Length: 217
Image (cartoon, rainbow, N blue to C red):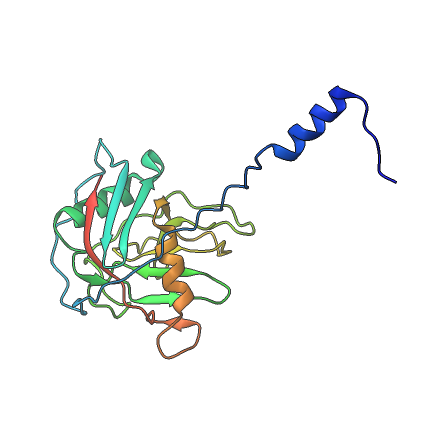
């Protein structure tokens, strides 16, 4: 025995529910795949650049890193790190970073890609140094993903080498934070995912990434 529907309003409502189109949930957008082109960059002699005598009164708001794997944009911390931003600007405008490899990738305990040494040995620098600035508190994850900070060999030894943090990292509060990646973090993460050349957790990245140009924004 079937069910008899005598209420016309109920019949209309049921028909509308049956015939109404269903809108599928919007598909999640995937981040564009990172594609690196082959680079001819190799370790080379450091270009001599005269340091600024004092911090610039007008500091850059951003830096644009053009690489063989895409563009990385860094927003600066401004007046929190005047000496650092002055030094990076001076070196960038002189072409110091151009054609240099990011020479070191660390994927265990700390998660960074290190760049800024034209020699690609980890020992190169501009021949001058400047003070530490804008140091974080000694807390967990004090260098969160996207942070850009100076590498050094002790207090007050900042030169040209810097690191890009691709995952939340805890370090001693000893490294000047001068910027944050606002575009292109996925590039650094893709390089990290490919791992270290020859295996291990610390060394040259398996996928070579070079700074074709570092521009002041």
